[in-house]
Structures are given as structure tokens and as C-alpha cells.
Length: 383
Ligand code: SF4
Ligand code: SF4
Image 1 (cartoon, protein in one colour):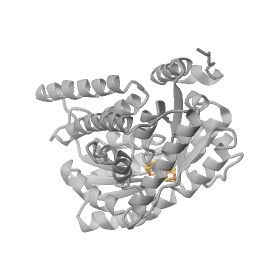
Image 2 (image 1 turned 120 degrees about the horizontal axis):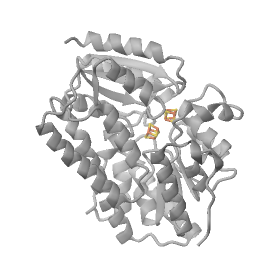
Image 3 (image 1 turned 60 degrees about the horizontal axis):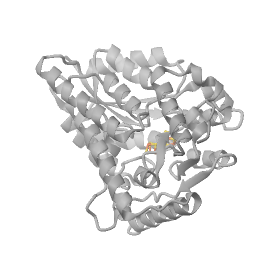
């Protein structure tokens, strides 16, 4: 058993994250390997089957951006800069502890950043096909996942059997179903929980690496909220659906503004919300690798071209969660989401769904302006 030191910046983190760091540290000392990931397209079932503990390394803080800008262009998405800044400054214990970083060819900024990151960390980049309906896309992604399995087996001397893959698919599907059931509580006329409470809880649970415990905690919250609902503890106001880029770094600014304006987020369509949670591999499929490949290709992210899944899912989710309006969040310099914003605006117009687009970054400079714009948008939704 070896000992691992935590980086000096550890003290700066909140209690919940510190608990996660300590669990990773313990896991490492117990001989467990850690894989850092950046994207909802990363097939966590394969990493589970290889015995890795998986943690998201997406940077959600403005703090490390100045350091990143010493090497990266300023005109780059804040998520990429923040993530790279954490790596450069050694401020993220998860990055520090990661034995392996798994990247993917999604947006150009990320894939070029991975090349830099790979200079001093073990890095594996998954080549994701970006035309999900091309006749060879499924086959290509399946082949890519098999190549990943071979790499893990050869590099880490592990055996990834069909049995282990099936068990991982089953466990992750239980987790996804639990997340969906919790999120679906917000379909109620008066939801039992606010968007902030929901997002904060689900974000925190991502740092609980004991999947059984995490599933139990989600299910406990769902059943206790179902009881509260019958006791009349609810959140009212206009109902908003959030779509667009990952929002961890702008969460307080944007969702806070929606709530300050008296509305509530009832659905997070983006990649930390319901979109990937509903893409479940078929656990009874004859070929588990092909089943994993198939389910991940259904994630309607703007890096896909065209991106029909998002166009189909968005109006359906607005109906399901009875959203009064859509707020489309584009992080500055995220070309794929910002350009796709035009099609989303048109889609909402065609479906008579009130829509607003927000382009922002991780700074607080535009917080006042966002408050004003969101309050004005909520007002247009009427009483
Ligand atoms: S928005 Fe798309 S590319 Fe970015 S993390 Fe989510 S799934 Fe991956
Ligand atoms: S938000 Fe956009 S630019 Fe930033 S990492 Fe995700 S897809 Fe890339």
C-alpha cells in the first residue's frame, strides 16, 4: 500500500469536494486506479469493467483561467481554459490523482487542449464519429471502443470480460434510471424541489464514487420528496428548460438569475442533466460493446453534425416538463452550441416556445446584465 499526498490547495475546497478527494486518496492507497474524463460521450461502463474509479475533470471555476491563458488563446471556451488551468496549476486533486485521462474528439478546442495535457499525463483520446446517422458511424464507434478496451487491457494488465461489461452496464443503468426518476419529479404542477437544489444534489453525487451508495442516496431523496410533495412543500413560478453548453461554471449566475426572477428550472436538457441519463445501453444485447456504442451515439450534443437528436428531444422535453420557456446557454467561443443556437431559436419559434439565448463566460462581469435580461424574459411569459 502506497501513500499519496494531497496538493497544498486542498484546504481551499468545500467540504463535499474534500470528502470526494479523501475517498479518491483512500482508493489510490488501496491500489485502485483513477480515470479523469471530460465528456458525456466517455463510455464509463468500460472504465468500470476495467476496475477504474472515474471522475469528471471539467473545470468549473474562473480561478485557473489566467494560468491557462499563458498557454492557450484567450478566445477559447472557459470550460476548456478552466480545465487546462487546473492541470497547469496542480490545483485539482482529481487531475493530480488521475492515472489516466480519457479525452475524446468532440470540439476542436478540447481535442487540441488534450494534446497539450498529454505531454505529462497518460492520455487516451477516443475518436468519436460526428455524423451519428452515417451508415458506418455505429460500426466505427464500436471499433473505437474495442480499441480502447485493448489499450486498457494491454496497458494496465486487466481483463475486460463480457461479464464485467454487462455488470457495469446494469449498474450504470440503475444509476441513470435513479437520476431520471429524481429529475422527473419536476414534471409535477408544483415541483417539490428547485432547479438549484436538484442540480447541486446531482453534481455532488457525481463525487460519490461508491455507486451503490450514490444510487441509494438518489432513491432516498426521490422517495422523501415524493412524501414532501403530498405534504405540500413545493416550488412554484414559471417553468424554465435549460439547454446548451455544460453550465457548472455559470450555474449560480444563470440559474440564480432565473430563480431571483421568481421562476424555476424544471428541466436541465444539457449534458449534466436528462439528455445523457436517458441514453441507456441495452443490457440484454448480444454484443455489450456495440450496445454501449449505440447508446452513446444517441446523445444529442452540438458536436454532432447534423444533430437531429437535440432537435427531436427539445420540443418533447418542453412538452413533458410543461416548460413555459427555454433558456439556451452558450459559453463564449463554444462555436458548435453558439452556431446551433440559430436552429434552436427557429425550432422554438416553429413550436411557439418562448426562447432566449445567453452567451456568457465564467466571470461575474455580466451578472447584473444577465439578471436584467432574464427578469425581462420571465416577465414576457406572463402571469
Ligand atoms: S456538451 Fe457535448 S462535448 Fe461538451 S461535455 Fe457535453 S457531451 Fe461532451
Ligand atoms: S462548451 Fe463547447 S467549446 Fe466548451 S468544451 Fe463543450 S463543446 Fe467544447
